[in-house]
Length: 112
Length: 110
Image (tube, rainbow over all chains, first blue to last red; front, side, top):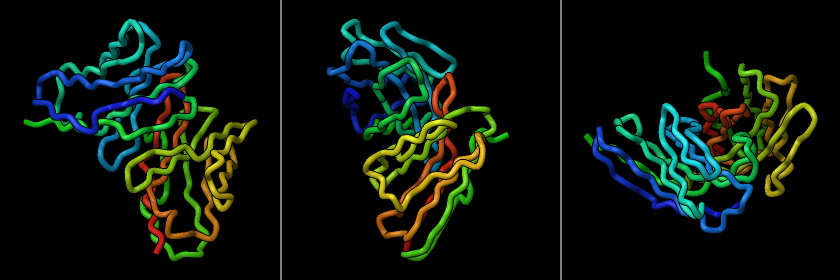
């Protein structure tokens, strides 16, 4: 699996967009980018995944650069409940359930 | 209804004991997993299991063994518990939209 690099922590004002970056410069052609988050004392939660096109669902948007070496998860209107650790994972295959390897993630703190 | 449930939520035990953590999913998924989250909050895959195949992370000691009485359950048995086994253990099941995780079991070995 390609290694990912994320900033260890970020702050965001409530109601503003939270943009979480992820670098995956060694990503290969068949690898997808997945995002999960873990709210304190809970299990990880799937957010979104994509290959090369930008993706959007009810939770977030995923922007993948044209060279696929980096991506950004966007929470359009962050709330206090979005405070969590966000994990960017790169994994082969369009199967969001393959075995995943979680790195350190980004601790997002949404402040009032 | 809870999609993936684990029991117990907290487990405190002595070194050398044998313990089990239960996991149940009501999503109809075929594949389930066990993860270990250590003190640094890194999540590490331990097992992947479906009706046909068990995939074991090579770094997992053989004191750990998954047991699946049926498709909806994947229990984790741990023999001869050691201090280093203290962690939070997450069960998960796989669906088309990703893995759904249980709430975790915090294991403390004294």
